[in-house]
Length: 103
Image 1 (cartoon, one colour):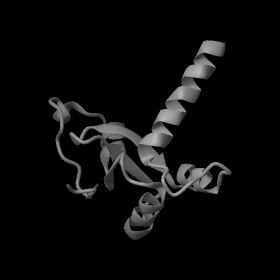
Image 2: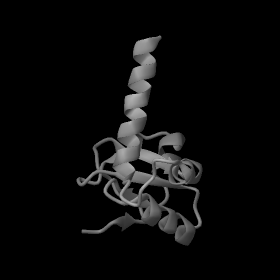
Image 3: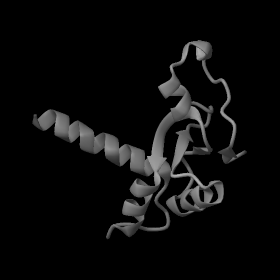
């Protein structure tokens, strides 16, 4: 299994109808949600980028992580070296759901 894809690939029909914003979001290193924060930070450093596109096992984009986000997670008190990118996405979705329900 490949953990990093440096060239985006077409994973859904209608790729030709994407906007410039869609294309810029898809550009750059693509990583899988099972990757740990430490490995993702290493990939960012090696690729000289401040963001990574997170994909599922089928190669579909599931999110985007930034250097600032990963650094904040790594520096938090609850961080362990077992935290994976998908854990961050799930925690963010849960927090957004709580905020939406409280409004």
